[in-house]
Image (cartoon, rainbow, N blue to C red; front, side, top):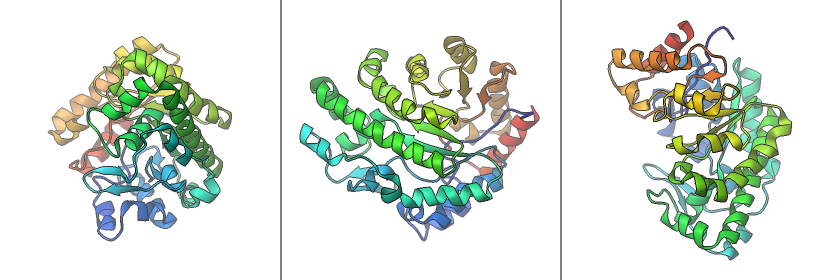
Length: 324
């Protein structure tokens, strides 16, 4: 590719008016379960923005719903778990994922997309700490206090828990690749709540389990979490071929720490997209200059697109990156 490739986390939906119009008629999980709708939402940013990759429209809780857990996606809140996990006995509810039986609509969406897309499709799954946190807390949390309490207080239960979640994530990723996805990303969004020592002890083994579970698929893999500047080396060591960097760590600093052999993804502050075009332009140029023209860089935001973002700004960013 002659230019730096660019796509945006949460590009499928969020700020696009065509997606919002669809949401007036359908709930998010209803869209996910309807392949023609999920494929259309996945393709919307490719058509409008000219990005170099599509990311499957789905959610990290979908495999968990597929195995029978009672989880809803509530507008303005996020995942809500009817019966939070609090003890060793709850582990019985985490049966292995059988993708063709449990999430057939996701795989059909992938198959539809790979026939129509002229850019690569990225599949994804949730990382172990993030999935565990939702299940233990019962929904989103700022402190993740119950999660950490179980992690510290019942380490045997914790390791069994995140190992099972890792196997579910790996099975979901393998199935997406087998259906046609050409890359995968693991979103361990809230892993940044942990110190390096705690991540290494309580999460890294499960993260490695995910990436080892898809290594034979032979596709690029991305590992990303928010506020994970203190964990970058550990995210790399989990086994992904690309490390996502959020906006808090300058890209040249990330490359210095991770070494030239590690590809990077990132890392414009999503809030900058709400500013003047001059501010956006300067931010994009700063990211590109910090990469210094090196190969192994995928331009992205340092987290997902904010709902208030003007899609035209994203399209201009794509043009700017492509023209650099």
